[in-house]
Length: 171
Image 1 (tube, helix red, strand yellow):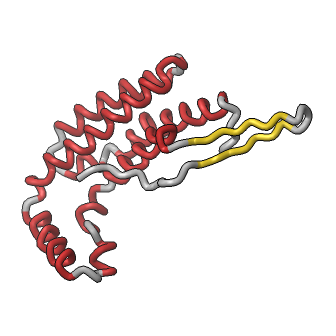
Image 2: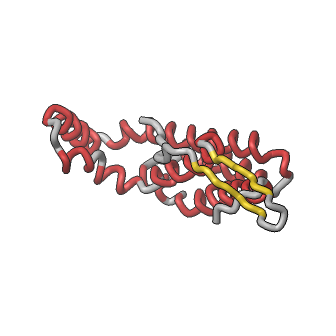
Image 3: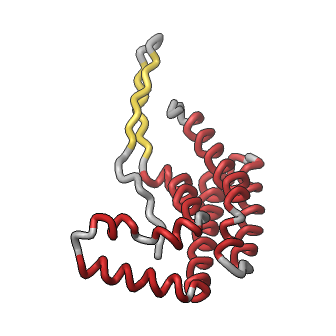
């Protein structure tokens, strides 16, 4: 199981300064938005109830590949029978994503001396520890608001500040 970022296009911005007739061309790439995309994908993982109840529903509803549908149904049965078996892998994925977010924030925004960098690092490490110690999916789910407040929102602020410094008006 991995984390996918759903945005697959390069965003392209033209900024015009009419008074001096200066045109600045700025491109935002997948590389630029990776911390935000990883935050969004990780946030989805905190909705463990949705994961457990709706695993691969998109494929089951469309169901044009009967072999795949059968394999998904078997996997869902196994998932419901032995949730603890899957919990360890799930914890590893969420913890790994948070570790990647910390690394990206530190590498991209560490030199800004923003307090948000420290908040993401400190809260991220604390959350990784809490996730690895979780005894069930509901304990992971209970960390969703903390993730939003202490990791996702500061990362978003850092991204927006960086875009503003680059004179990109994206909001």
